Image (cartoon, rainbow, N blue to C red):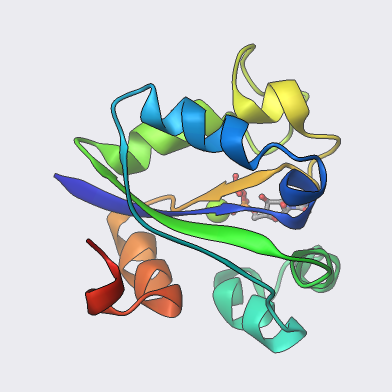
Length: 137
Ligand code: UDP
Ligand code: MG
């Protein structure tokens, strides 16, 4: 059993597809172990994406991620990290496989609807960034 952190980004919340995204995870046998809607400050978003701090898109990405509410959730299941990444699709929607969330809903490489931890190491930083142990059931 594995846990991963997923975020429905501000564009996903604005597009009214919170239910659609969660349904795609649940119908693949994954379980929502924690969930809340929050609005990140610029500093919150910068801390979350600290691994990307040297990348050219860091300023724009962290501005976008703090522009409106997001839904953060802990997703649990067998190979949850890989499964969530498969359901999401590639970072750039132009490269995302048909039927993935990003292929179906993302408008561009930055505004791509959803986040998912890319490794166990990332998940172990990202889950406690938003949730205490008591909030994960
Ligand atoms: N991103 C961007 N431009 C790029 C690459 C990434 O704006 O050239 C944004 C995009 O929102 C992406 C996030 O930065 O989801 C984190 O990038 P990463 O490479 O970790 O992609 P992900 O793991 O989300 O697929
Ligand atoms: Mg990533």
